[in-house]
Image (cartoon, rainbow, N blue to C red):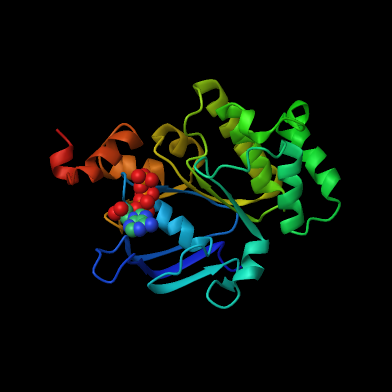
Length: 251
Ligand SMILES: Nc1ncnc2c1ncn2[C@@H]1O[C@H](COP(=O)(O)OP(=O)(O)OP(=O)(O)O)[C@@H](O)[C@H]1O
């Protein structure tokens, strides 16, 4: 049987010895081909978790295995098979879109890089933008470039930090549809952090709810909505964020 896309075992992170833990005792096993959501209020530990999964932050405790590779021992083998996108990480602004994509294709040693860039540009409606400096693009255009960058090495695991933050509803919907189609075509595993509960209900088969660095609940969106006796995931999120139990939550 395939090893999980992500196996996190008792993961924890303290930014300083006397600081409270940003993440504590986080354990989960995300199967291959799944799309999971990482949810939680501001400061819950989502970005810290993603940074540890990417090997950008060293955990204070616990263990991460990505696609069967132990991140502590075999990080580069894992990194070659995964990628990420975050609207908060800007691409070099003076380089053109094509130059940016070439840099990443080179870093990942992508075979037939120009053909891969042309293919992604066509898929993500970027062909007209390839010669434009990345810094001059609109938020929606930058999101599409960031997705192209994230897919340049045909990752088996994609980590997405708020993939539709600051996009208008139409562009956000386009990105969500695109991700659904991409996942269906490639079987890629996706972990996404999002504050958009409708997006999470639509895309994710399972969600991890973080609060104060700990996982306080998990399950399918429909399962959690039923468990909390609510109509949608937004209400479940508010119950958890405000510390309401099911009995108090249901009028
Ligand atoms: N570089 C850092 N140095 C010290 N503390 C940090 C650092 N980055 C994050 N923290 C702290 O770790 C905790 C978790 O932060 P994190 O950014 O992981 O949360 P988040 O769930 O991604 O929040 P948001 O939704 O606001 O992006 C917070 O208390 C935050 O202040």
